[in-house]
Structure formats: structure tokens, C-alpha cells
Image (cartoon, one colour):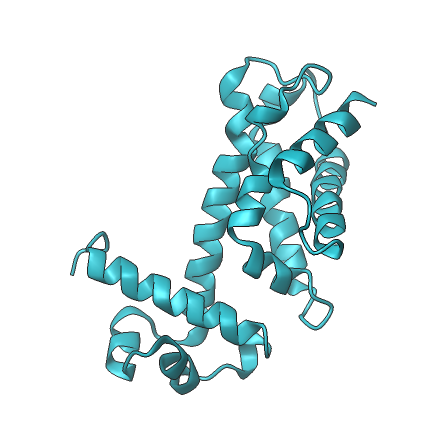
Length: 183
């Protein structure tokens, strides 16, 4: 079956949504295939056609979200040869639009009830974006500490937004980020 088949995409989207709903209630390690199937309103055969275990669903969903996050993170780089925080246009910042799109997932990641493993997975991904774009961000040699600092700065903004229940719009958060970069 083609992975771009609309039926497959809808089924996987439904399973991802069901997993998100269950993760709001309990840790990934306590979610069983049976309850995921029930939440997704699919049979076990359908589940096992696509996955071997619940962890595979999480891995796939996390990778999908991180791919979208990477595209959002890189958006300002498509509009300039050299990214300068002092001249950055807030309209080119897309990372907060991504967070809003996957708000339920990020509420789980930053919840105090879940393992810090999710935080570190997110941290490692964002940090890797900086390492990939090192040549575009600054001239000269950057070190691992700077990329870690930058990843935590972005996550810090997201956590603060989370603490305010994502009440501000993504556009308002873009302005906050740009204003911080101008300091």
C-alpha cells in the first residue's frame, strides 16, 4: 500500500491523534495497543499493518512534527543570505506557528507529569538545526555551547508561552523573539 494513499494518511493521522489524547492521561510506556486501537476506532490488524508497537507510533509522529519544526525554524533563512537579529522581519519567523499547529503535542512535552526525555528529544532536534545552519547564522567557528544555549533560548520562549496557555498569538510571539534578538 502506498504511504501517500489518502486512506493510509487518514488512518495514521487518526492514530497520531488518538496517541496524543492518551498521552494527555498517561505516559507512553503505559499505553497499550488495545487502548490505542479503541481510542483511534481501528482494529488491531490495521494497527499492526502499519506499526509493531505503540512506541513506533510515537517515533513516527515525533519525526513528522520535527520535520515541520525544522521547516519552520529554517523559514527566515529562505529570505536572506545572512540572518541578522536586528533586521529580522517577524513575518518570516514561523516557529511559533508550528508550535500552535501542534499545541496539544507541546502541552504534553512541557507538562510536568511527563518524563524529561521529551524535553531532551526536542532540545537535541532544535540544537541540530543550529549546527546544520552554522554557516548561515554567523561567520566564524561556533561551538557546541552556543548551539545548546540557542536551543534552550528558543525552548525557554516556548515554555513561557506554554505557561500562559498559549494565549498570545503566534504573530505576537514572533515579535517577542525579534525584539529579544534586537537587545
